[in-house]
Structures are given as structure tokens and as C-alpha cells.
Length: 148
Image (cartoon, rainbow, N blue to C red; front, top):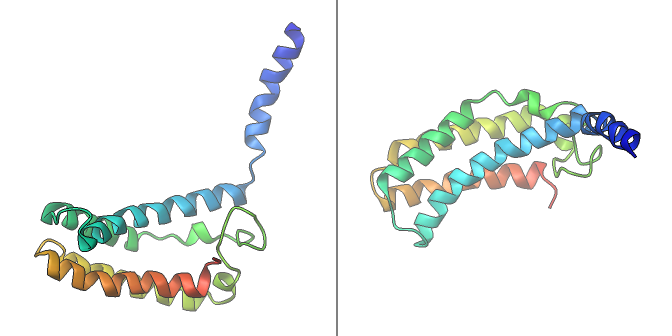
């Protein structure tokens, strides 16, 4: 019995290492987009009245999104990490087939993030007004490059 336990303990790290580099890349990519989503959620909740408008919280979320929009996420889109390659992602192969278009949409997101940053703390109306264009850049990318 003791030998079985020792063998299991020795094998455990091997199983942990069995996760492929592609799967780890997808997890990192999903984490990156989760951070964007968490900050977008701050704006959405305030705009919908589910949360009181808080200028400091809105500004922090905007600052975070601008920071995330400037992050070089290229390594998160490694080859063989699309929905055709792995089951745990909705990233369509169209990303890799049209990387220039994908990067252009990321640029649109960055510009809309900067516009949000300029007004997020100025008032609920200004923040809500900037949310439409910012959310629109997310939707445009999802429509083109993410499976439902």
C-alpha cells in the first residue's frame, strides 16, 4: 500500500504537467478577457441603475481598461489555440486568418477605452454615453471572432 501511495505522489506532478502549452495559453487569454469583462461590468451596472454611480469606481474601471487595452496580448493568440484546436475556447480560427482585422478591432477598443477614461468620472450621463461605443467595440470583435 505504501508503494502505491508513493507511486501516486510521484505521478501527480506528471498529471499536472500534462496540460498542454496551448491549453495554458487559452486559460491566460480567458483570464485577460475576464479582467476586461469585470471592469466593463462596473460601467454596465452603473448605467443600468443596478449600482449607484460612483465617480471613483468608474474612473478606476476606465483606467484599468485603458491599461488592459495597451497590454501586448499577442502571445495569448498562439497558433493552435482556436476553437478548432481545443474545446475550451470560443476563439474562432478567423482571428489567425485575419490577424490584421483582429488587431484593427483591438485598436478601436483602445480608442474607445481612452474616450471612456476621459469621461468616466465626470458623471453618470457622460460615462453611460461612452459605454455604448466602448461596448460596441467589444461586440464587433465578438461578432467576427468569437463562437457563440
